[in-house]
Length: 388
Image 1 (tube, rainbow, N blue to C red):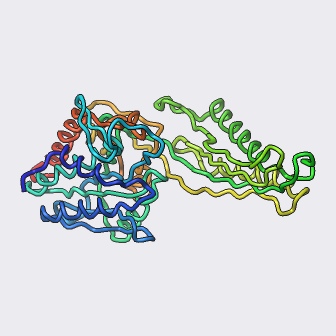
Image 2 (image 1 turned 60 degrees about the vertical axis):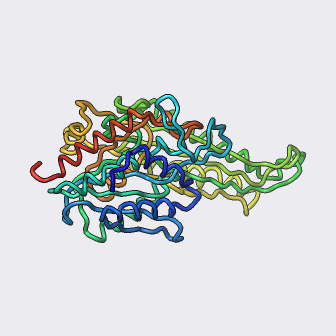
Image 3 (image 1 turned 180 degrees about the vertical axis):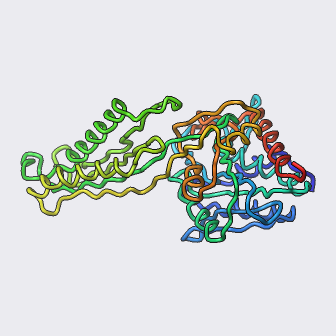
């Protein structure tokens, strides 16, 4: 098989609509067939519905050690966005490849797949593992099943690179996250009799204000890490929705909010503080009027932060792959925290494209970024091959 270019493979990958709400199995089947054509066996780790899968493959010796090249297959929706071209058809304009997921993060997946023929052709002293996941965009959920399977199988790679877009810069840290969904149930009545009702919107608003107060405390008191653009943990309300008419006291309000925390800060303690305010302060007021009223709080997603030391072996190694002397930290989250904290594999984030282009209409990756990633992976293969 003639080695395909990363741009050709990216065109194939972008054509699969793998928005997180949809199945990714068509893309996974394509990758399986591609790898099988090169003599590489892969293994699916399914979700509980059978509609999505992680994919794992090893090239080189079947032993522990080596390095994971990891990326997610799902993308964010295009709903409500205005694109200049079909988001699921790769389009080249002015040295940029446009398409949903081109940057986040099918560009990295394409570069990895384009490098497989060279991996297969070289005598490998260390294994290179490929890990493609699902449902990263909705809380780094799918990779949890892959990591559990790796642990059960006793597979222990030495290092991991998660290829999220960093402009091929070496990233050693990112924040952790807790995503919270709140449902406030009150009692409805005519607005002229509002003291006899329990206004669900009012109580959700009080929760939003409490969250803001926690965020202000974090901004003022820290802890702080100057390596981050936002050097402290944050609290944020993203959605607050309730009510049906002005003259009706609303009996239902929903709120989605989050904490993004520095590595080492106890995210669950912040969640507990938020929950305690709902349980100990707000609910007694609500139930004194309407015993059926209450607040449901669901921590529906979350992931740990990443905090790899700047002098760690993996940091030094990946800086060499990237041709870089420096490293940094980012506010956005990745699956790297799960590989590092749950599986215990030292992990770095480094991949092509800019996070500033991710999730936007007309998302793109520059051709020179793909070329840099291809060269980066060539150095990974040099390291893994015999005699290196």
